[in-house]
Image (cartoon, rainbow, N blue to C red; front, side, top):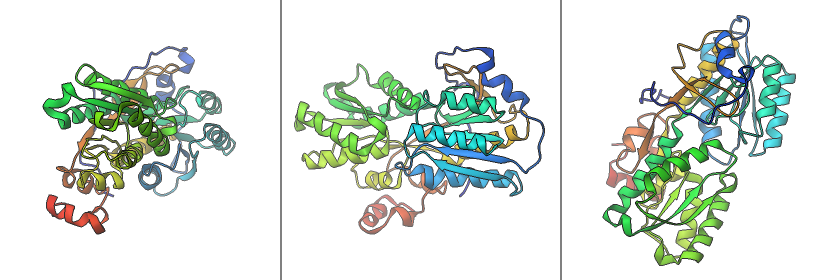
Length: 367
């Protein structure tokens, strides 16, 4: 897969999450010194949170594994597990990684707070932890993700643009992500910073486990409470939930209202080109994955992260963690060629199957 064209944003995009904690808990100091120098024969643990969202198995895992192999002349051993949205299972998986004596752990937490003790166990065993995509609590040594408040702002701005001059008289439903995911709170904050005072929010939900089924049920509840003629748009924090939301809208006979999303899932791209979903947020998984791999290999070899990570972030339990925040793009039917196709995420043939071909032809996708 081709390297993403978008350049890594540096400098200004710093994240702050009410930093506190002792110096021992801070990831930054330990990250710089690393462990004793090692060669390419390192052992890397990779723990991803769930498999309902298409990205983790389709993009994140293979991209991270490929880059680690490239950086270690194919000598690294990679141990992988997916927690399937089960925080207790993920804690057990961390224990297994500790028992197996991995040199470094790349961790995308199911529950960022609940995983704190496991991160501490890993640190106590001398294992550096790279927090991936979600800022896990505990003494992490590095972090890479996207500017999550910017994701929410991008979604909110797109929704307002779709509503146009009618925004001030419009009523929307907000479908936020899971409260166990710190990213969800940041998406929500970013969206509210744009939407508040510009549009009426009729109903708002925090969706358990980011589940499309739960989003569908929440949307049905909102339609029942507000009435099908009184909903002008839906803020959906990701594409999976957007799918459940759109199913509920169709069942109620509601059409032609904008629905946002995130992750640029293939099904969402197809919904976008057929005007069922207004937009998604495209995040360069190749870029994020490569950075995580670079951080993990450097930490396992005892190398400094200063050449990789230009930013610092803080959580409730770690201060000034070396970090890279990757920029995002608003994906609409107008820029599919310049984003997911250009970056090799999908081919035109993958998008333009069957009934989607005529929409692709009309938009010049793949041309």
